[in-house]
Image 1: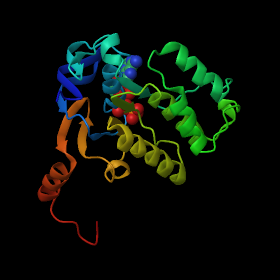
Image 2 (image 1 turned 180 degrees about the vertical axis):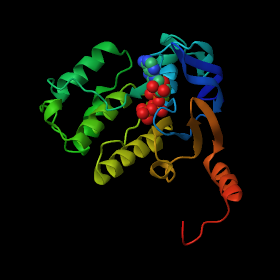
Image 3 (image 1 turned 180 degrees about the horizontal axis):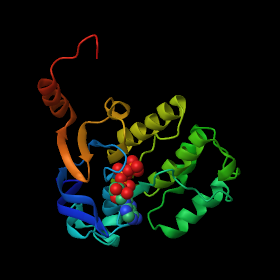
Image 4 (image 1 turned 45 degrees about the horizontal axis):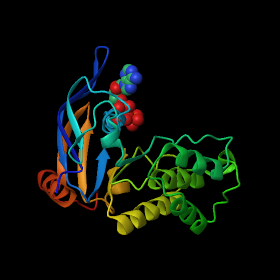
Length: 233
Ligand code: ATP
């Protein structure tokens, strides 16, 4: 099976600043991948390169073997994306957003989105701006999943959500994984938020990949280097 995502020497420069440098990754299909790093590490830049919102300064990026540089339609047909802070059109109702998505996407499964939102008691007639933060996150997720993506990309989906909304959001993501065997790539500042559900880790810092691998292996290696945890940790 082709990797969900393969990057070779991928880099992005803004003026004199390299936001991402010489990034090479091969991420397995069917996994839930945590992209972790502090502020300014380059997470959003990497996710925007994968989703075709940015063109790389150097290197290549492929999604399921398709060149994703510059937003190629073939590669992006397989990608669902929820941007950081999932900006919905606040003045539109949820039903309007579902209709707009349908008009933009050939493979849009509106019934699937409606079913997911009904399960969460989110009223379709309500204006997006009148929903709670957790409900808005769920609508953004349902819109991304209505495209029936093979790769779902979520940029810091848990930031600004309260603990219950975080739990519900991750439950919805994992339900979609169980139903459709999609690959998920999601970013966070905090590894602890994602460790329980992820099976692969990419650690970014200062625009470079510091660590990548199966999460159990990476964390076991890290603990071997840093020593066992003590009660004082
Ligand atoms: P955060 O967690 O704060 O969202 P991040 O890990 O997503 O950070 P990026 O947003 O990718 O990091 O930013 C990486 C670097 O690139 C930072 O130094 C940032 O200031 C810089 N950068 C990002 N976007 C631009 C831009 N449009 N123009 C100039 N510099 C930028």
